[in-house]
Image 1 (cartoon, rainbow, N blue to C red):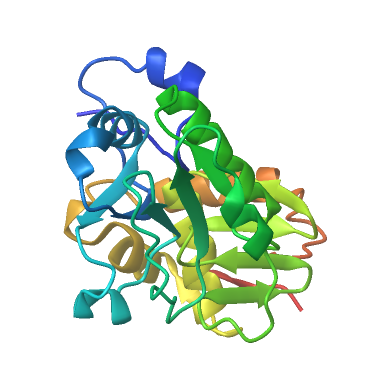
Image 2 (image 1 turned 180 degrees about the horizontal axis):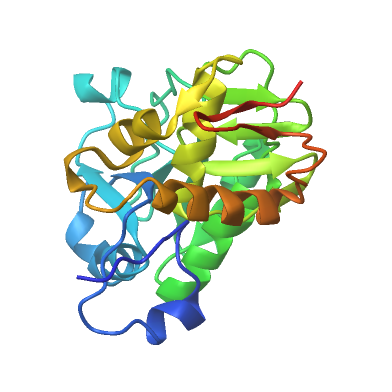
Length: 239
């Protein structure tokens, strides 16, 4: 079955998805709502666009204390303020409010009116993701090499403020290189760590994907900035 490499798919891409495709990467969205049935059109749109959606009725659910998420969507449209909810890990927040009520903005919380066109809510979410700085020197979910930042939770790569669009395979290749901390990764290492039991190609398959990764990074194999070739063995981070 063909795969859809996703980072949260755009509206236009969703409409054009061929039947049989599925998502291989995603963002996790946690919805906290006393009446999630009222959000079904939005939930449907989120899942169609490759978001991993979890729904909780109670903001005091103990699972929320340890749950990692990219965004918490707080439903205050039913008149329940959810004032006691406090994030216990870094994440974005978006508050759904009744039409005409913008009061949470006074507390610095980004808001979105509901009911609304689901795609307008998704656009607001994507704007929040875009506003978040990709670099946090203390974030254990980020790996860095020179001016590149890999966010393991969001599965994104940035060079400064610029996002570099990679497929999941390319992202995993770069992740494996960074996790080696300068050591050489053999082609067999890549086959096992990136593809695992799903790998059926020859070692040149690794070279093809590394070449594509280099092109997207603007790297030159003859004078590498990021990925150095160890002839007859594999690859390592460039000096």
